[in-house]
Image (tube, rainbow, N blue to C red):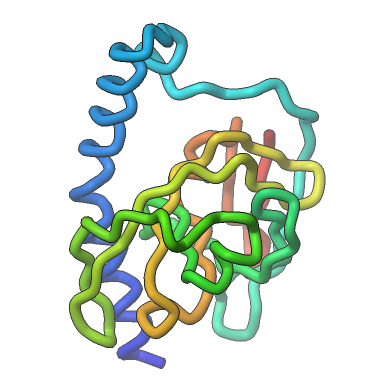
Amino acid sequence: MLMRTIGLVFVAAVAATQVPNFVELSKQTAKEEGDASVANTMPVAASPTGTTVLEGDASGHYRGTFKLNGKPTEAMVDTGASLVAINESTARRIGISVASLDYKYPIGTANGQTEAAHVRLQRVEIGSVRVEGVDAFVLKDKALSTTLIGMSFLKRLNAYSAEGNRLRLVR
């Protein structure tokens, strides 16, 4: 368990170095395509407002059933992860064509070095909280066994806070 946690922290650290590249790539692509709304800011689609509270588990982690692209997925909130991280099996299940992914971002995990592909999820939801257009990494199944809900989701909320053994998500 400790090695897995260390690996996840390492993945988050490596992912953090890649986020500026994704933002710059999104801006460059938007400028080339003439989409000023994406070029100037990360889009936030109108969505229902609400609050969802997750209870911490015995180890203090916040887990829940999130909907990724409308498909229920068990996931753990990881404030140390820059992006949402999913494995190939989850990607396929939520409608992402794994064959078309470009695994070009080097990532270190507890299982060693691997590559990740960048995708944009249509939406990530839990309870009444919904965020559209969320950046994510896809890793090979053997490199990632659980879905991580990282800062690419959390930063798009109006607020999130840990209070006692509860994590409050507000949109």
